Length: 94
Image 1 (cartoon, one colour):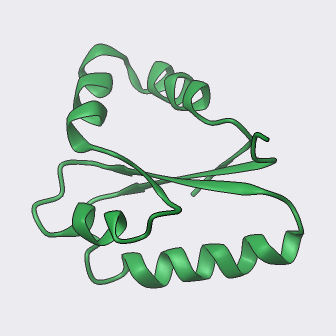
Image 2 (tube, one colour; image 1 turned 90 degrees about the vertical axis):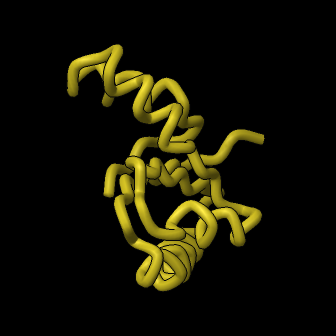
C-alpha cells in the first residue's frame, strides 16, 4: 500500500541533527494516524549525513549523485516536479 503522506527533506551537512529530525518527524507523523514515507535528499554533504540517514532502515535516502544529476538537468521548478514524481503519498515539503 502506498503511503498517504510523503515528507521530502533536503539536507546538507546535517550529521549532528539528522537523528533528532527523523525522530521528530516520526513522532509528528504518527499522531496523524496515516501511513507515511520520509525521503531525505542529500545535497553533496561533506560530513557523514548520508551514513546517519542510512542507519534508519525505514527512511529513504536519495544520494547526492542522484540529486546532483537531477539538479544539473532541471531548473528549480522542474526539480520540484521531479521530486513530486518520486513521492507516493500526499506531498509535504520541509
